[in-house]
Length: 76
View 1 (cartoon, rainbow, N blue to C red):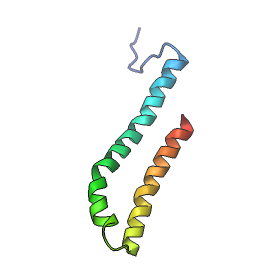
View 2 (view 1 turned 90 degrees about the horizontal axis):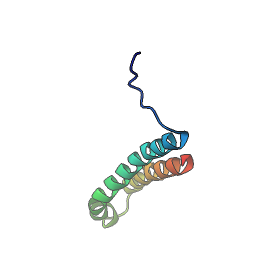
View 3 (view 1 turned 90 degrees about the vertical axis):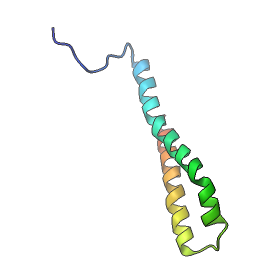
View 4 (view 1 turned 120 degrees about the vertical axis):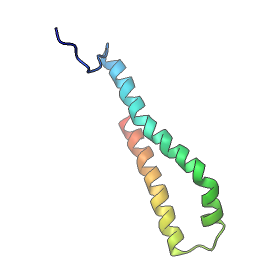
């Protein structure tokens, strides 16, 4: 009998838990990355004169965070 390398889940609930963890892991990484860079952002963006470049930076940075969190939240 051939052995399969596909993981076997005892139940649908167990598979659902694994899927939820796979979805949450990237979101945690993105939030961790935002927290690591926040001090630099505060220094170079928030404490400087506000320009159109600052606006584009903030839109792109936080739009990605909003999309990531809302996607994970919607699928859970």
